[in-house]
Image 1: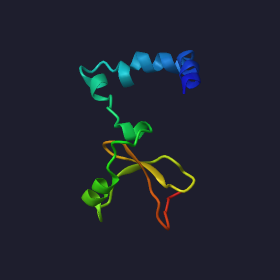
Image 2: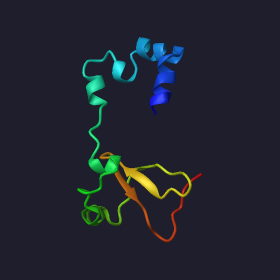
Image 3: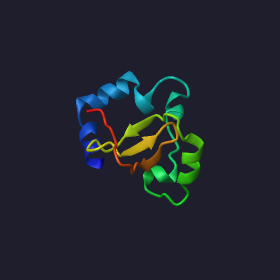
Image 4: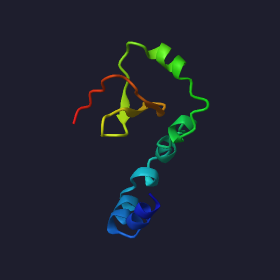
Length: 97
């Protein structure tokens, strides 16, 4: 990731991003602050405070929006909007390719 940012910061794309006011360089008042997410510890590898049983009980039988992290089988996802990282361990996982 660091090498990617260094490569990006030395190219013309970086200048375009800053000039256009995209992302954290947005010229809209409060836009850059609003775009920053406070990720829970489970999103960055610390699952000590993640209550999987409570999450399952609250959402059982309901569809959940998620970002698929691992395309191989679609079994690792970040649940939106809180970015809770979960690994799905079931008999069959259907992933759209």
